[in-house]
Image 1 (tube, rainbow, N blue to C red):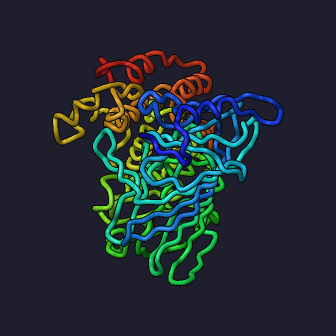
Image 2: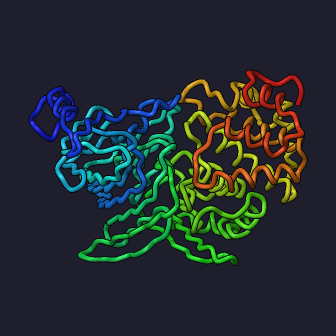
Length: 468
């Protein structure tokens, strides 16, 4: 039975919400419980657009207990009698909307909120959710883990694609980006690292509070909190960009050399991709058993153990492609991963390794990977059509996505190609895009070229194209 904050049956509560009206007599209706993403249809919510999250968190790693308050500022995109937020696990202790107590109901990952008064279309409102409990670790359809991951001395929150709903309520779909203020209180002696800029660090009564601010829009799957003991390094690049790096003490020596290359990599990426879209950069390096993958968490990617140079290049490239220019749905993951993969190819090409063309042909011939299965997997599906949610991070999204970019480069030449990838990042800075947006942009930038075969064979076509 769904839990409710009041002793009123769900159906009756819904009737009350639907028949309630604001002062102008406007009757609202409930917002949708999902945005019908092709792979995660329940994620996200209709009827409102979140513009800011103010998260106040307190975590005790020993007790594995999180206490949180989420102040969510949003704009109603329709007349609303009720709206939904995504929240998996945790206990809701109370909800207010515009300072007035609101009814609420839980059903699976859906938290349905019924304000005291209807919300008018276009109205900006603030919802406050108080919650607590032991945050969950979520197992993805591909069997990887995300959400709130327990580590040797704390925790690591990773959100791609659905994990952020394990530690705060929100509109958890990449199409709804927002600014963030995240305050995290932890036992003295531990650090709490998040996105954006560290605005303050204060200790009182044996606990330390870290206040982080992210001004640029961020999709919730890119939000992170890393709690533990870290060696913190702060520096500044030649152009004044702050660099904030947090490294688990066990990984300091192993990661020292590669992390020292962050300014070099960033300068190379700005030269190739255009101005960096955020106010700081850096990295979070945990222990190898913290997670099974690295993630391009905004401002500072998270790594389980010391990363290699090409992985660091890949995750930092995501700051342009994926973090700033974010897909409208999970179907368009190749616009993240194909670009970041190709960035690593370009890095190799510029730093004495194989050229992008050599890598492309090695993949096409089937001798890039050691195993026959991995080489064949590149052609399992088009980069735009993963077979289901379990495969949105499979090889075709990365490798074949990068091959699409190389085919474009072959067609237009280097000068126009770099104009395209830089212009794409600039035109859609801090926005959301899909594959149709990209193909239209490419065709506009090179109107004298015919891309129909590339789109048909490499982007949308099933199987291995007849010719490289």
